[in-house]
Amino acid sequence: MTAEPTRIRVAAAAPYDVVIGNNLLGELPGLLGEGVQRVAVIHPRALRTSGDAIRDDLTGSGYTAHAIEIPDAEDAKTAEVLAYCWSVLGQAGFTRSDAIVSIGGGTTTDLAGFVAATWLRGVTVVHIPTTLLGMVDAAVGGKTGINTAEGKNLVGAFWEPAGVLCDLAALETLPRNDYVSGLAEVVKCGFIADPVILDLVEKDPAGAAGPSYDATEELIARSIQVKADTVGADLRERTTTAGRAIGREALNYGHTLGHAIERVERYKWRHGAAISIGMVFVAELARAAGRLDDATADRHRAVLESLGLPVTYRADAWPHLQDAMKLDKKTRADRLRFVVLDALARPTILEAPDPSLLIAAYAEVS
Ligand SMILES: NC(=O)c1ccc[n+]([C@@H]2O[C@H](COP(=O)([O-])OP(=O)(O)OC[C@H]3O[C@@H](n4cnc5c(N)ncnc54)[C@H](O)[C@@H]3O)[C@@H](O)[C@H]2O)c1
Ligand SMILES: O=C(O)C(=O)C[C@@H](O)[C@H](O)[C@H](O)COP(=O)(O)O
Ligand SMILES: [Zn+2]
Image (tube, rainbow, N blue to C red; front, side, top):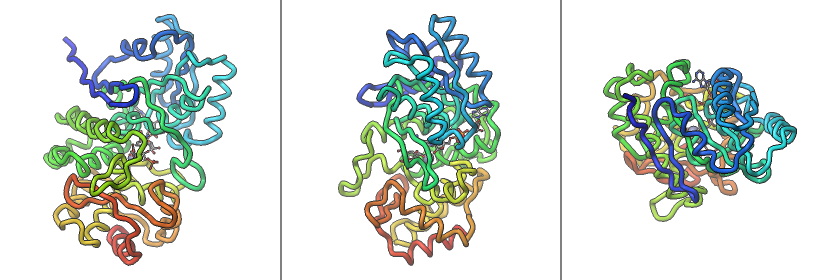
């Protein structure tokens, strides 16, 4: 007997489910909806076999299925790859009643989501994330986009999927480094909203660093719930600061410095590794600003290090990182804005911190 999949609803304008389980392909036609004739399956080379299996399935169900193979990892999130996808869709005659399916990690779902948002000003997309990071974060919530030389995700759109299918079997083939990178976003959800996540990781960090941990499914479901609740309350990241409450920006915890590191590394680093350092940095920043207690600040380094994630970066990179942070999406005019914690699970915004605080915080991670 197969266990029933877990379903987490995302309260978008058109609400959709994130489904967590095994063998979920049977759900795909229902998500594509009525009237779809052509489906483009966008996947990286590493997932060609899975892409082919989906196309065979779709063909068997009467669709005309096209493959669009894209480069691996961040090399997919470029204007050139976007234009290539548009040209395949154009040549295959894709209309507004046709659809896109993405299968891959967060880079694939970000790119494919943006293709769907822009083709004919928006067509249906279903995401099938195959990395931990894709399942708990990238495929959920409708942020799509690409990088430019100037910064991470600088061009994009909000475009919600019709559904997200997380087949846990995909995690079995994921390289350990990529699994651990996804755990950075899981830990992020623990710090900003659901501390039970931190308890589950701390109970057995060596076990938690792989998909066969007995709490893996709970970690995934809890993280998706945090993401679904947060985006459901602020789909377009419009709640910046209303009193102490912040909206979707909370999900950007650790990303101000993290994205800057990714740019300095010319997008060759895994996202989660950069975000890990970014979270330790903002914990130190909050501590230096007198906002966060020592125990919670120290807990960041301890939990991330216990998973094998990096917590330090090159001291000499600071000027370049500062430059990159100026183009962070939370920045307003020349005022940097950081998501920090006032306490565990109490995210807020620290606006235009004194440069001495930034230098002190960076000294702690370099
Ligand atoms: N849109 C959002 O809300 C959001 C949220 C978080 C992160 N992101 C973005 O997600 C991206 C990172 O995603 P990622 O960490 O999944 O990286 P990724 O997409 O580069 O995947 C990591 C690697 O794993 C391979 N892979 C994927 N699935 C596999 C599987 N099942 N078995 C074996 N190999 C597999 C890929 O080919 C790649 O080499 C970043 O660009 C980041 O900016 C977006
Ligand atoms: O969904 C969100 O909102 C997030 O901030 C989630 C992040 O983990 C993710 O990396 C996102 O792509 C960052 O968004 P950006 O707008 O800072 O590029
Ligand atoms: Zn992220």
